[in-house]
Image (cartoon, rainbow, N blue to C red; front, side, top):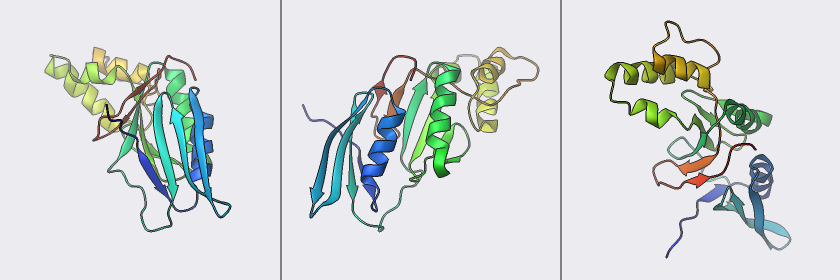
Length: 181
């Protein structure tokens, strides 16, 4: 059976990126590091059971939001930890649980309960949840639950969660791990 492996194009930071990502996710490992004339050409690594490859290929192409890695979290602690680590050293928060890491790669750090809440049969609940999502930078489980339940004024930082699943948006890759990092 064929496998699908995300292949990430970097200018010169493939090794640095591999080390950064494997330091963040608990179940990760370096598979290989390939050099040509003493310089790193490509890397192969694994995060939460999903393999990735990275290539040093020059500055021609940059990452953009057209592809992102979806991380479904089961706890607020997981969201908070992943958010802090992925936005460190120059990463940038965005809206609706999205962020860019210091390499410009987009991630979605999302409560695992969000899909269930957005798919609720009650249109009023769906609308409250969507309104909450649209106001969110980093998710707060409490705020999301309050919106779902119809609390008068959801409070708290906007959405946080964990129990990790990575999914490359648009191509359907998914990784899953237990809660805790």
